[in-house]
Length: 279
Image 1 (cartoon, helix red, strand yellow):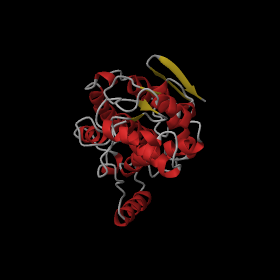
Image 2: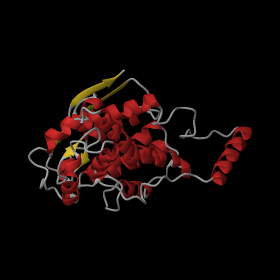
Image 3: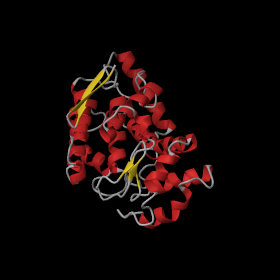
Image 4: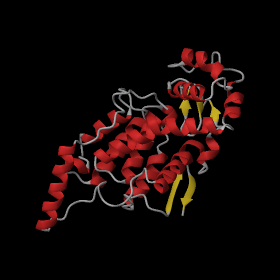
């Protein structure tokens, strides 16, 4: 949604020294009979496990498109009136925030002369605005046409992973979070991006750290995720277009209250009052 800053989306991976130290601490705890809080280092799969990733895509689609069928959203495009121009595709790429420009450029690189390539100059011009200048009237029609091309679909998948999914999972792992926490990060980056503004993902995380620590820093995972979701709700309420916080209140907090930190099925939740189920 919001074009991320390249420095803030860089993966924060622990050094080999850190990993060795953690493993040593784990071994010592086992010998001494110390009970340790479960973290992302547990055997349970993270959000990048194929089954968990499919769940993540469905959860986001329920909030972004009111449907679990996320693969039907390659062709989606409309201006939702949030000041970001056209919103389109499986993750809400926006003409006003740069990520749609990057996507269409990638598609042009992989499929020269495609139906969207002529719009690249217009997308550069409207970047940072809500303008449709140079895009209307045929851009939505041509987007839907491009969405039938498997190459464009794969471009959407790859940009979703590069800009949103992979950074969220990496940051979540480095904070010691399991699948649910990694999803909370992913959903936040999808909506808010990861730039330097006060409502970006990094700013939300910093706000949460004022009142709780993640497991990697010795904190309780549930307490930290509650703090993160509190900060997320604050960020959402700063913008009218995102002021409905049900994707947090009746989705992510439901899983958290049930202690489902590994995001195991079955899952039942609501977004905007509509019920959803994954068995």
